[in-house]
Length: 141
Image (cartoon, rainbow, N blue to C red):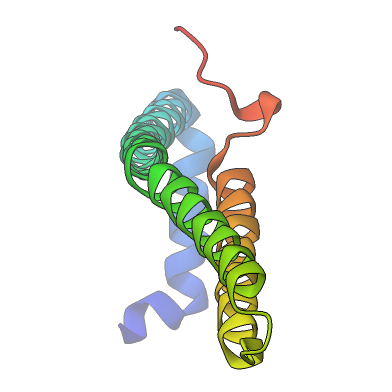
């Protein structure tokens, strides 16, 4: 190690390089080509890894969209139908028995309707979140 720090070593090494440039230039070019190839190879492997990750995320997105379309949408529609039926039944009860106070029942049904409406809005927000913007559409290679 001490030898590398001496001026004599660098003078001798400099003379060798200057007198044998025909050996050093091809070696430097070879080192440059190897470095260039290695950089390209590493970049390709990184790109392949990112494509695989993108494919996995796209598949998860499609599964989430399918699950949402098959399970959540129909459930919300069913809840909205049931809420409408309950409102209709309360209206019928009020007509049959106008003297009874159905206020707490109406409040409960309105609260349920508000919750279902909130769920529907959340579902729409989820659809927007899960949908791919046009610029990210899958391109065929």
